[in-house]
Image (cartoon, rainbow, N blue to C red; front, side, top):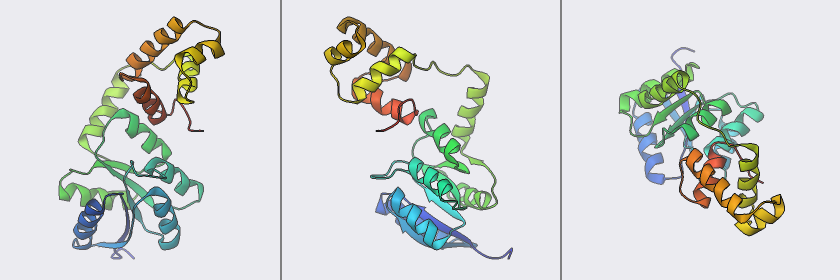
Length: 212
């Protein structure tokens, strides 16, 4: 029925954030909060059990993160719309979330009315984007895509991600240690990072590498 409340599930690993969102939506007309989840796995389980209309999903959670949860929801055929609520509006998070099936992407510090309006729009299947995310996507359309890693750079980073030292990487790829260091510097520049750990993390964020 048209006057049925929009049924929500809130997934965030911070209790204060969950409580704040739950109180805000529960006090707003036209919404019903069905439950709360503290990680992606719990969100998927509760979504299958409660069948909400909209899931407010954080991306960075321990265990199963939001991106994995969105993918799993689609795999299980759960039709709830996913509205990502996060503190991040960077490209390494925006596109994977949208590609995984998120209906929208809003920042947690968005005004209350924007969050309520976004949840209503998501329930209808409309795309919801915060202004900063929309602006980034427009600039992405107008400018060339950032440099991706070469095949050799991916090979080097894959071995680094597996815990190999520069010497071990060099031995595996039959190149010199100096060449490995040169590749790593190029990788840092392309990914906008300054060290090995950050390069590996950013490569996973951008789905250049897949976790083992």
